[in-house]
Amino acid sequence: MLEKYLEYSAEVLEAKKAGKAIVALESTIISHGMPYPQNVETAKEVEDIIRQGGAIPATIAILDGKIKIGISDEELEFLATSNDIEKASRRDLPYLIATKKNGATTVAATMICAELAGIEVFVTGGIGGVHREAETTMDISADLQELAKTNVAVVCAGAKSILDIGLTMEYLETNGVPVVGYETDKLPAFYTRSSEFDVNFRVDDATTAADLIRTKWELGLNGGVVIANPIPEEHALEEAFITNVIETALKEAKENNIAGKNVTPFLLGKVKELTEGTSLTANIALVKHNAVVGAGIAVKLQK
Ligand code: PSU
Ligand code: MN
Image 1 (cartoon, rainbow, N blue to C red):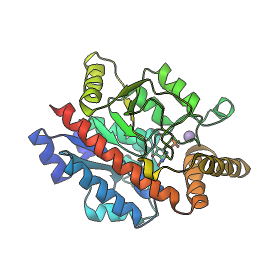
Image 2 (image 1 turned 90 degrees about the horizontal axis):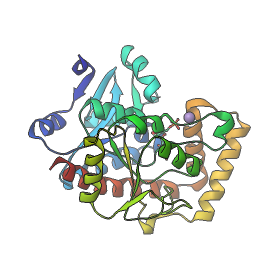
Image 3 (image 1 turned 30 degrees about the horizontal axis):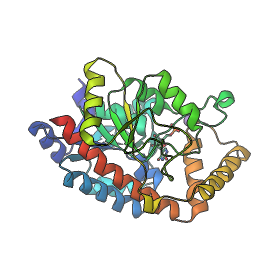
């Protein structure tokens, strides 16, 4: 029944049969997160890092209404250059699939598709969360609800301070989602290695992370685990600089009455524009670092 919706790449299918570790990757970062050609280059490099780490990469996207688990070079190029790719979160999947459209999967949608494909680890840049002033806008990313119920571990560099990071942590706590610092006590804030918030738990190696994830699911405690891995020191941005940029982006979003699924892309686009490439370099570096850590955890989970 489900299988008719899924289409595996040859590499991923072979890995599944052989019982190899597989790591899911999202496509919003390709279609809406980075400019061309850096988006294609980064996606390929990240896939290679995962292979070097002993796992098989599965980039996930919706193409012609099929849930792609692993994509070809041509499909990657298409996702990276076409203007016709919807940002696809949980809500959008049924429509895009039923009407045979294209979609770049968010963290929430990638988690859903990864679970359908039996993939336990997912590597990305940053997760969505509770937006600032959510107490009046009610803007809370569907990523958080997905983390509450879908059994996929998400390796990321924390959450950007376009969000209310404190409220995001509260939401995750309410929903029983452990936020685990990878070699850190502080919650990373994407461009910076730390924030004013502590992680819930710290682990210093892939084995401990994998043990925690496996234990959660064996106990029947459904939902994700956030593995928060700080950006490498040499690529971290200066905190005052990025705070300033984010404040400006938030102000412009408000002035332009941006709402719904456009909020996050608008804010990310503004940050990109205002930082003239330094944020892109940082973004590429942190995703690659997350790939190293994610592959390591996936390999341990498979044992
Ligand atoms: N945060 C980032 N980079 C991103 C996103 C969030 O730092 O690319 C993307 C991810 O795909 C995430 C989505 O799942 O935005 C969240 O969108 P929303 O807030 O509309 O749920
Ligand atoms: Mn939102």
